[in-house]
Length: 253
Length: 347
Ligand SMILES: C[S@@+](CC[C@H](N)C(=O)[O-])C[C@H]1O[C@@H](n2cnc3c(N)ncnc32)[C@H](O)[C@@H]1O
Image 1 (cartoon, each protein chain N blue to C red):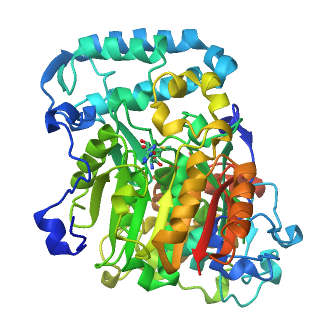
Image 2 (cartoon, protein in one colour; image 1 turned 180 degrees about the horizontal axis):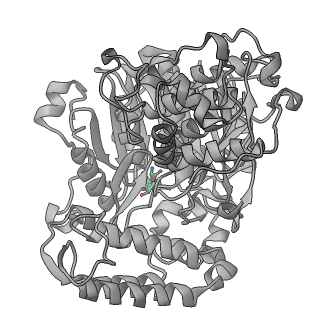
């Protein structure tokens, strides 16, 4: 972890925001007073399943993580994470900073304001370091977390009964034949809503085993047009290529 | 002095000093670089030359400051250098690697050389050089004579916010920030209070009072925050039992540590803001006793400390010497997991 090269990374136990969150139980035990954060134990690690290659997480419900084949109904799925407000999403995160050596506080003038957020339900980690205040780093780490959740957390898709959700239609080029006028103008990668569409697109590509031509057919696009859409955003391109690599397919260029 | 903390009173007399100040020009707050008019022109070529020179100095530092007193290393200094550049440029996003064009600066190129030399040779804190500190979502003006607010202290605002959201009456009440420095806590809390909530910010230092007044008006909080000069509770006479909340980050460094501080701190920040006496607890103890008198029932206090040992001593002191006056006494850790704050509620 290059960012941390000069710091010891330490985990702050849960942050204040976690106090009232629903993770108190069953994930968090022995919170004995509102501000006593020191005795909190975190999460059952076996609940997080990390698939090494490409690092995909499949979510079937809020509490257990399984491969997509065994997943069924989802009342809090990956998409719902992205629809949470910043505050709500933050409550699902453990925040840590890069520990300063020495006593800190008034003793010290050092501007390392790195922030690392770990999204407890999925284990996805985002960090930010470049800004001047810790507060702003928290905001950019949270933004990054949203992108990573979209890239890494997979919602199960039933290909046979599939119809593309609105947030996916909105990022498709206008010439898509499944896209009606009601989807409005095309949303580009700079729009915060792009993340949701991107997640739905990767879900679909994941469900069709990485085949761009098949996904394109479902989305009423030519393979070339869908490839161009994927290549228009770096993180989307990388996620799709990781996924394809895990299926022994060659990368899109 | 009349104590009506209503909007009307704040409106007509935004600042009430308990002690009359020397002529205000003596304590005229300095304007941070990023707020100054872009009155100096330079070429991007000259700016690149300065940047290269400055980077060379930063590189020559290596880890020597870090090894000597836990000061900044080359990486951190390079980051600061870019921030200095951003603050100085009329357009902070301007890319000076572009060919050779003319651009506008908020401080002269000569000054930039001079300031960076001070940063490296005298270890003058970066925040005094640019005249501001980014703290939470605020950008606070700071200058010599005022403590640069620390990231740890940001948590006090979070905690106050949490308390206020649990108990709305706290947010409509009167708060005090004792030893306000740049006004960081008063402003952070002032922005989270309800329409009737008010803060009194006090400090003994006239520079702190003037800088806080400037920061308060930059955030348009003149109607919410009153700044008073004086020693601890002395400017609050008449408010006994009235406060919904008291926060403070008083000087808490044990006197015996003062000579060994990181150069940026020890050589440049005011001793008045750092030195907490032998053991560092002189003011904290005073504040604890004061909080017993000044808080109303159910009122909340939060003090920053030097760490676990001071937290323990304070909690012991409150449980023994001030027995029966407080409940919910707690030590709260900072982001680095050091027990940093003591909080409690007046019975
Ligand atoms: C550690 S600084 C904290 C400043 C600011 N609250 C912050 O957190 O950034 C302590 C402050 O206490 C002030 N101070 C020192 N002695 C004081 C006294 N007797 N009465 C009031 N304030 C005092 C100093 O001037 C300084 O601004």
